[in-house]
Amino acid sequence: MNWTTIRNNLKQYMLLFVLLGIIVLFQVLTNGILLKPMNVSNLIFQNAYVVILASGMLLCILTGGNIDLSVGSVCALIGACAGTFIISWGWNPHLSILLSLLIGIGIGVWQGFWIAYVRIPAFIVTLAGMLIFRGLTLIVLNGLTLAPFPSEYRAYSAGFIPDLFENMHLFGVRNSTSLIIGIILALAFTAYQIYSYYSRKNKGYSVESPLNLGFRLAIIATAIIWLFYILANYRGVPMVFIILGIILIVYSYFTSSTVPGRHIYALGGNEKAARLSGVKTRKLLFLVYVNMAFLASIAGIVFSTRLNSASPQAGQLFELDAIGACFIGGASATGGIGTISGALIGAMTMGILNNGMSIMGVSSNVQQVVKGLVLLAAVAFDVISKQNIGFNFLSKLRRKGNKHHNIDEQKSSTS
Image 1 (cartoon, rainbow, N blue to C red):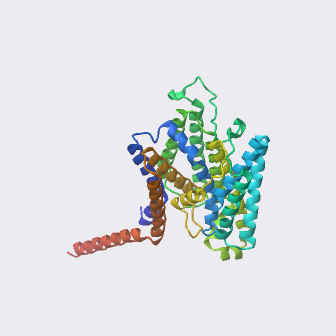
Image 2: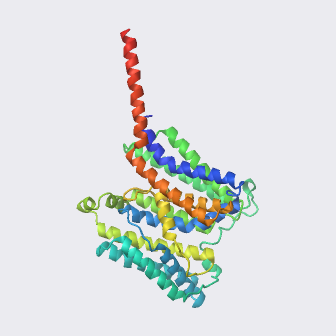
Image 3: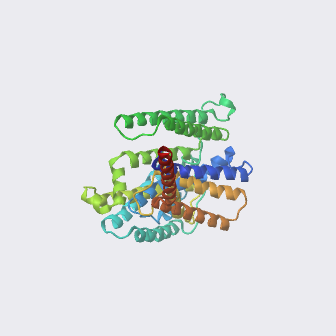
């Protein structure tokens, strides 16, 4: 295996290795509490909004390092609207959710217009949006907290998938349905990856070796079944986990296998070249911010169901969590580089750091310091890896060793 292949593999899997290392570390430091079924379920609930926001924030960053500073305020405003519709006015929860999402899309249209067509920098527009929508949240709620939400509203993201086989107790778990779902997903993922592998191979694309493919699929499939096995030993699969799965699958496919998705990468790589190539850059930038507001609306509903209230203080610093997750997950600060899976790993890293340190009793002040250092280290790794400092050093050593080896061979052949 050549050094280029080693370098690419290390860069691709380094984030995953770091995440696994953090999990093992906190599993030891918390005396096994981190991976207990109840805590794993709590981790999903606690970090669902970060994953949702990071999926949308990644698209913003891909367009050229742009960000959206208003997502936390949008989450709070959507939660406030839903609370007003359902709790104060007594409207139907399902209709209220739909109306709240439409309001979120309207917010995206508003911000996307100023960013894409008036060409005001995204930082300025979303900073103004952060102030505007936070103020509107206070106006809507009149500074008060509305609670509680009815069960019909909370069922979308705060409930669990019911066990359809209550008396089965497959492999001794409490919720057999959850384990069956995990097995089906692992098999479906494996089948899709094998199909994709042979499809690319038949088209002449460069593919990994079958041994590497089998090793990777075995690890991922085992991890999926293991996760659902843990959830099956508590109350089953959270409904919000299904929402996250749908969002991650849809956006992973969109960014990697669709023309608009590839155009977003082109826009971030070089906007002028993309425009000259026929990419409708303004329309694309507009849709990216409409999408961001839509996902922020979903995150606002998910977060309000977890709190079971609409609070004027909701959404504080959510934008920083989403931005941090994207950069920790390998997104480039200049745009054009990043993946949904990387954003997921970044969000999980932040979530496990928060949860693990909280279990250990570490103060919130120290937690902020640690998260800041992790974010800085992630971006520094991205910059250093692009400069190929470490790998160039290894390559020089390798070339030097080969040179000495060739000299020795020449001497031996001469003698």
